[in-house]
Amino acid sequence: MGVRKQGARSARAGSAANQAALEQGLVIAAHGRHYLVQAGEQKLNCVTRGKKSDVAVGDHIRLARTSADQGVVESIDERRTLLYRSDQYKSKLLAANVDQLFIVVATEPSFSDDLVSRSLVAAESAGVSAHLILNKTDITEALPKTRERLQVYARLGYPVHEVSAKAQPDETRAAFMPLLAGKSTILIGQSGMGKSSIINLIVPDADIATREISAALDTGKHTTTFTRLYQMEQEASIIDSPGFQEFGLYQLSEGMLERAFRDFTPYLGKCRFYNCHHLNEPGCAVLEAVQAGAIAGMRHQLYAQLVHESSQTLY
Picture 1 (tube, rainbow, N blue to C red):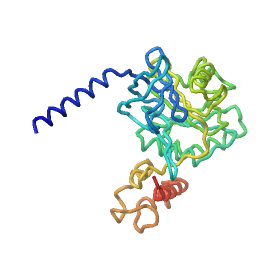
Picture 2: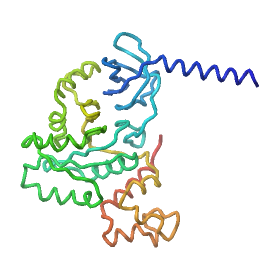
Picture 3: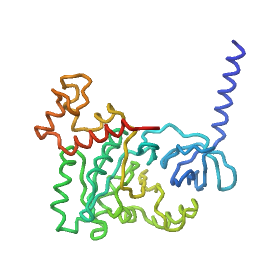
Picture 4: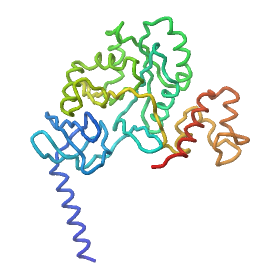
């Protein structure tokens, strides 16, 4: 018994020593199982061991160097937060250790309420604060209708910031900088919402940095198919993600989902049945709130759809 304990202590001590010998790094870009890592003043091209791809942009990692500019990810430090999306078969990590999620929408082209709502649910379930950024406010014909559509989210307490990255660049930058200070922020949105214009305003030389990252990851000079992190002043960082048209949340259980709808919160625990699913049960406080207009019908429809999706998960 004593020998085994001594052996265990030695193994732990060896493991701690190995960890201490590894370099620390911050993952600033990801493409497949290839990662660009900021290690001190140097950027290293890193891979994971085997077929694991459980590293996210924003992760603080420990790496073993294999050459002057390459390394292997040996471990991931504990995360504060993790944002990811998933479908029936697999999950895709979006970013780790983020404090806030900015969802970029625009007056034109029209944005998807389904994607916005799913993004908000993802943020709530991850413990990440969410903001909506309405871009292209200079397109005044579409502005009243777009503002009206965003009211459902504003009433839930999500801040809505109006900007025009191309028509009012100085004002847009001035609006963003106080929101970003001291925080790690991820920008997401459908293609065409003007996310790249906003990034280029906020991050000096963003295009140059993106080309460097593309070359380092060998993804081609003009690709935008990877997520990347830009470090800024005031201890801030901003993560740009590729535009996407779907946002699956198959990983969230029914219990996680009901708690991720902040408009449901006042009614949880008040249903007739303690195990109410809030779908079609009699005496359901959530359904009564929907009927009374206290919860938007489209929000409850999304909840029902997400509950259905979570029951289909195969992985």
